[in-house]
Image 1 (cartoon, helix red, strand yellow):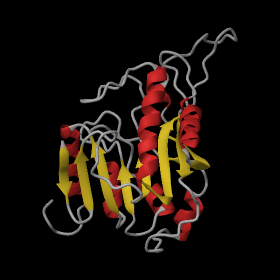
Image 2 (image 1 turned 90 degrees about the vertical axis):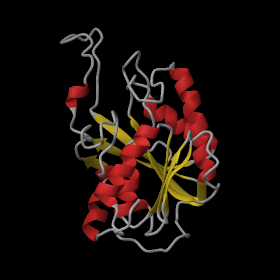
Image 3 (image 1 turned 180 degrees about the horizontal axis):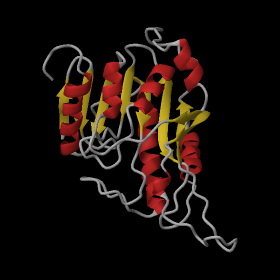
Length: 259
């Protein structure tokens, strides 16, 4: 455990976000992450099947840590399910939003990400009957939160978003496909590059510091490097750190140096 990769712009920390002391409080401009969903996904180093009460307790701990790491004008883009129906219906999006607000985050807005993936259906309930049907929306959320003030006053003040991108992405319904496991080095639950790319260009300035506390296959750092931002990723599993490093080499490293 410790610093896995350290360049002048990009850092990977092989550690638990709840335990790491490698990031100074009040230094991060933007957090983008997709935490474990507690859907019994087979991660290498994380138990993704705990009780919902324990899942909410875990969520409270890591969101509280993120709150401390952000600058006062820092933002938080939280990619989570709208709800879940495995082992009982749960309002995940609403519950985690309430947890974040109770910690001290202020709510800004919610982006609905339409993955176009209806194959994730796991149950119909009472098929063709009103007795007990299940309604399942093939979407995820990106909850936009901030620490103390929404207007960003720190940083370079340099934005790199085009007029067309700004007009399209400030529409809170985003439609693009999810990630392919093969492209993500076999990671079981990676999000596509398009998601952090949009969040980075909408909510941060050039050279800002981007953090992903659940780095996984490294997508957020790839997007940060391609967008001229600095990035820190925290990942508990060393194999996933290796995947992230290879993706940075192959997809994002623009400085003609060895990582």
